[in-house]
Image 1: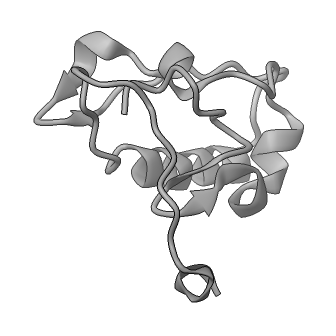
Image 2 (image 1 turned 45 degrees about the vertical axis):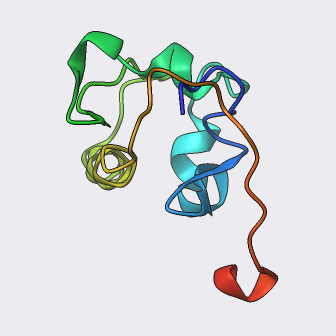
Length: 99
């Protein structure tokens, strides 16, 4: 994944989850809801196929409990494996895998 065609909040890319559904409060206070994953990842911080630094843009200062949600979000997305040699592609999986 290079992240150029995958929507950060709206596509199913982080462990098969849609981040907008997992973190609705964070989505509600995010500035640019249509950002691609590749726009937010700090590509210089991708090591062993994992990105450990993200450029997230919030509309307001977060409350402490929102910062805890952000920590959960970062833990979720930092585990995603990156392949910087290729482009994004769709992968169809069985419906019951996400139920």
